[in-house]
Length: 586
Ligand code: ADP
Image (tube, rainbow, N blue to C red; front, side, top):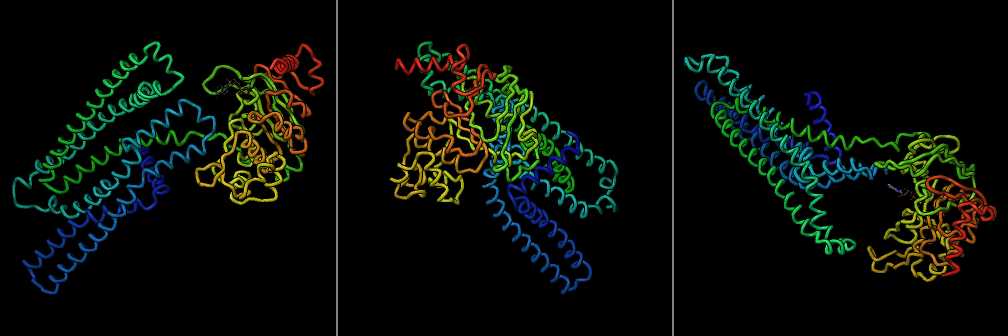
């Protein structure tokens, strides 16, 4: 890596540390300055004191030098101790802050990136490097002391020993250029060898971490999932897959230990060599030691800047959803929204199959649309594209005539309320769940509870909107059934003043009576909003103005229930008859 790039990576690392672990680096730098300067202060004042004793012998000056030596050393030692404590406190907590670096990235990342196996691997590698070995950010923190100590050490020792090289000692050996040249050669050689060894270690390490990622994954699979997954239990026993798994695990373990052993041997060789060189050079002269350490600091820097590069690659994965900046008109609820899909086709990442093919459709303001079709026809995928969990592979989606990618993503999301099949309620109060906020408009919340047909159960809750759901945070929390949860999720969607409401299988957990109670009144509860209603039960789609029939990734029919049922060769009639038959025989 080029020197300039290394400096950039180091600087960016310090910016990340300043943001996530404020004060840590400042404390480390102050600690190292105090620690490194102390011996030089003593050396410098000792020389003054010896001079004073051998020349003028002025008591007042002698006392001043002694007092300054003690005083400055005292202050430096205080700074060192206070900072040491601060560094220890902050360093012990820094791993939590490092986790925050990853969780922040997770939160801002596109949904699609979460499912991308390459990105998952990249994240795992960056996390393992950091949390298992301290590579990158961890090393940067630890090596900061070395960095500061070397630079202060060099500056101070150059200042103190410059006279050794410039003034003549009178000793023929010490004054000879061979001696001085020899010293410099040792410094350069020690730097060169250290740096080469570290590079080699880095290469072995890279190989080892790479195989270790797979090792851990494979280990989890063979050693844990294979046995704990009850769905697999039958096959594992019938085919004695456990024996095969044991052999595979042993093979993985052997390979892993081989690389690990090589790494340990290299590290110990290197520290013996560096130790003896540094010790030998250090015994000769302080400056040589500082230069030796400089080469160490530089080669460490080479290593952690490489590791930081992996972290940055992950942190720099672009967030496409954040690219738009057009604001959504605040009056959109009143003015309405029209959605249009134009020639939209879509493949999931890492898949070659189109799950939506050339979709062209318009959702007009205020319309109640039902999407029907067999499992896997593409209905949910359509909705995922609409809310930009994914972007179309081909074609465009428009909101009021503008490509949805141009809008500010957070504002765009405000246009929608969703009730997904796998919706989640949280262990907050009922009111907070409905408002998705700590501030709850009680009147509005109870209205939505009414529309979602939850009033009866609600009347029985002594704490009303302040009732905690589930028992995670409050002993008095109430357990709710799947059907009740679905009603609360619908109330939450209605509470949000969004012009489009999307309900994906909202009736799955409801009994037919509750379903009729809510959706018989569908137009009223959704008011002027545009509504998309996905359901397997065709009988509950009759409430909608228009039914769109998906089949095999395409839209094959559109119309009202009455018109579609009459089209006897059509998909809708086929589905309708199949379901009617099912109801008759059930
Ligand atoms: P529907 O909602 O009509 O049941 P979906 O939109 O959920 O259909 O699924 C359409 C197709 O896309 C199916 O073949 C499904 O297997 C596939 N699919 C859904 N999610 C993913 C995913 N995350 N990755 C790859 N394929 C997916």
